[in-house]
Image (cartoon, rainbow, N blue to C red; front, side):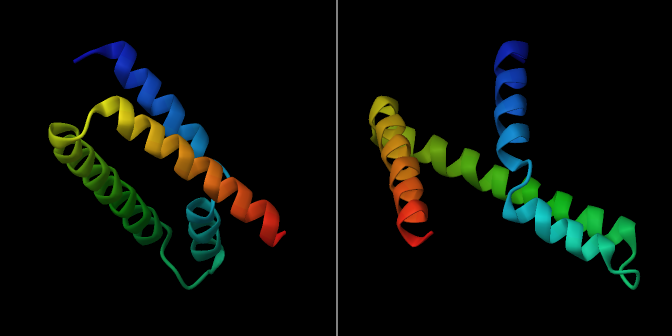
Length: 90
């Protein structure tokens, strides 16, 4: 395992997830006294693991037919587009 890649991915995903809708939804489920905290944790953790697995699988499949540099450009343009859309709607 490449430890540098591991910590780069971990740090990037960790910072991206802080304060996002997923964390807020998990917070709200956990705040409800009727919901067992372990169940909320396990549900949220499994969802994040599965979405990460999907991202890895799709990224690996796309990189076989599309140059990774172009995938990086497309991701950058997508993030910029989402940012602009968010600003316009605000």
